[in-house]
Image 1: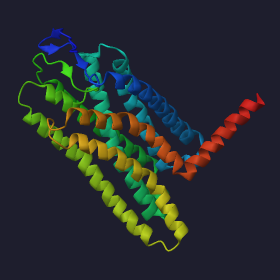
Image 2 (image 1 turned 45 degrees about the vertical axis):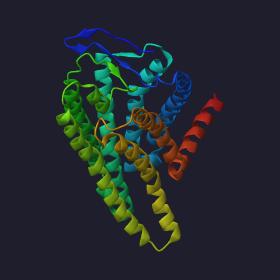
Image 3 (image 1 turned 90 degrees about the vertical axis):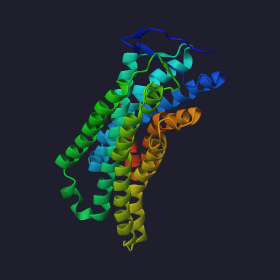
Image 4 (image 1 turned 90 degrees about the horizontal axis):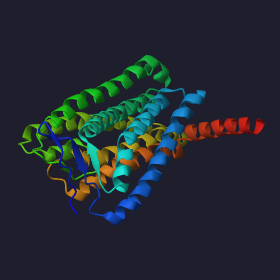
Length: 319
């Protein structure tokens, strides 16, 4: 069954149809329930990380400062994508206005790019913690942490202002059926009715800057970390050093693995269903996994969470 949405404004569609998973009508209801649950877990998990990092004095450290930013990013990113996705999974008409699509494109792209840089910043924090433990508090002082976080946010904003604007300036010539569940740069480039070589080249360059460069920086950082850990004679010391980095490294592998698969290839080479499911993973699953990974693999977070919950429970019982 083909969906139609025939209103246009100034040569551009006044809205788009996000086809999403329309080819799988029975799967849509299952996805609606599953994604709703994952979204609630994402909100609960990331909000918990932010609150615990703020309320527990022992977590007032650079690592948890950046972790709070990561959790806030994931909350904003999922909230820019999932509500519209749930509406489209439930409703028969899967429309989104042109303005709504533009807002989703600008916001989600800015937040995704910011996370790419923030994860690299977090790897530098782990490098200093493991390789220069005695100078950690001096090197990672609050002003530097704030400056590094600001660089991550501003770089995300800058790239979306350039990339999203260039994408939305493409003529779509009446094409309004987006074979995806989100307004994303690669899928909108596919929709254009002109030569998109420049846009694809620009997307590739941006992908190098926000994917390959951060990943390379992370690999170098963890190379130094591995060298430092191997020099530790105590097995307990090595285990502790590995524990401080394993959570971040797990998040890096999951996040960058799916993003690189989606972006570092020509815009017209990804198969229809493959691109959707890869995007579904990094927009829905990864933000939910981040707080779980950091909580389960980090004794400090688990201890602080138990302490905060005990205090909250104690106050409730007293009342």
